[in-house]
Length: 143
Image 1 (cartoon, rainbow, N blue to C red):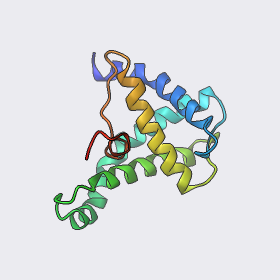
Image 2: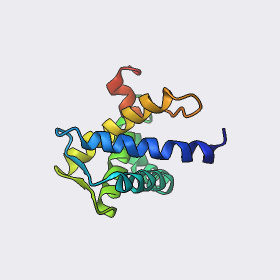
Image 3: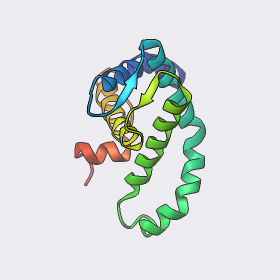
Image 4: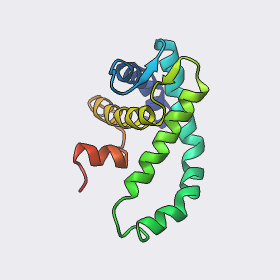
């Protein structure tokens, strides 16, 4: 399938995943309704498309210093940080998407969103996605 078609098929599933995450009280993610979840899923995707490379450019020097140019395998922390920023920005932009505990909710919500998107979307043929670095670490798929 083409990338656009896959994205359109993933969109409502990602919205349902956001609703599922909002039902987990310990995460502190609140979603007002399914339409808000749909808008939030689009916002997270568009923010990721627009901001991932600029954020990697900004965090590049810090990544190079802390990982010794990639020798120390903690680069997943920077991927997770970018995911947290995208998740938090989407919550800030969209009325009805709230992070009750601020940064802690953004961190836990972004991690849960990454893992659930990976697990659920890869269970559907043709909709597979890559696992983010932080989610891969927490699921035990990288050392």
